[in-house]
Length: 130
Length: 130
Length: 130
Length: 130
Image (cartoon, rainbow over all chains, first blue to last red; front, side, top):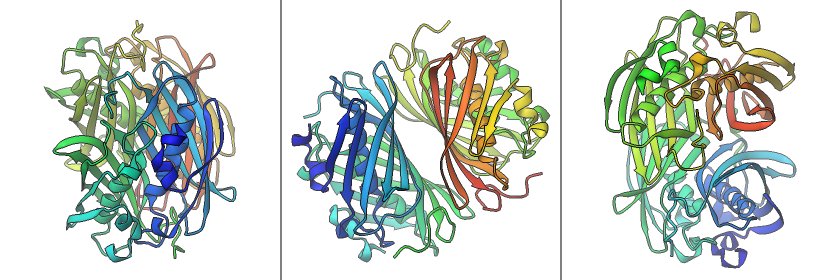
């Protein structure tokens, strides 16, 4: 999965640890990730969390995708920050799962993400992706 | 604001329209935006929506940031898709705002985003951004 | 459906209008619905919105249930307020749907609710309900 | 606070434990709480969780209210179930807080709730509550 994931690689994301239902990834905030306020664009923080979520929920046999995600931005990320995203499974039931991802910098939480997954084969996200 | 927003520019996002409380942005799904399932990484769809949200809620005098966002992924984006994000203000009250962003491809909705904003000066996101 | 819905009836909710993918319900904030701050307990505002959502997504042939909901409380409801909840379908795709419910008082928005539905038969919510 | 909270009392909610940033409440699903599908109306599950959240975030000196909440319904509650809601603080920063509430029945998770709080004095929810 990692070898095909150009998006995560392109963001400079590193895969630090994976276990069933868990994953830890990290990323440094690059200059091109800053926004109009001079801080890390929320999209990149989301992308890091979403990648951690994707790895955590794909530690089982079945291909699984994100159906619904939410993120709370608690503190801004800044250029050069090393952000760590730790994804933990909260519930897994049938085709659905719920995962929490904490994004921190030197142990300080800067965002909290929650993701809902669906195993493919359901129709929420079609399987005919190419 | 646009001139300083390296993140949105780096993603190849174009700013198509802005009006008070509204913004329309678009982006083409590039090869490097695809993920392990071969479809557009959710982080890039989120980033497009988040940028539209940011422009819509910054059409007033006060600098405003995202506090909490959620996104529902309804259909996958694919390489080469031209995605359009339309942000519309639902409520604006005191320091808080609520914005909806619809992400579509040729008129077909692929994701729905909802963002909660706070004007800076509040302490949810510190003002010491640089 | 309405005739079996003791919960909505017990809350004094009235069903004002239903159309495919839409429903309007209303409720008066009773004394027993107030909380420790002296305002309407969020649970009752949620319940009104959730009922409107349930009616809107069950206007089709298939039994449908709530999978994930979010609500933003914008202004407090007070004892005696007549609250109106208008549910509108945003997207319906396969077994999934996305509905927005606006809760207002005399035309003033006090809360915004977003609900994700699943038709039963999916395993997110078991079908063995009794 | 509890003595004034008619809403929680009216629902038959009991306050089992409170500690700084934490609260555990429980409630039995009564007949009048069932909905058109014959299961516990989501509004009552939300109300239980929301009360637990309210107690957890009001364990400090300052009056605090809910700004935004989300809930994922994982399994239906049934008539007679004893539901337990455990609220835990995840982050508290300035006027904002983030709390998770797990709702379970005999140790089995049936819903996960996440609430964002604001201390009153902020304008997201007006202070003129009576």
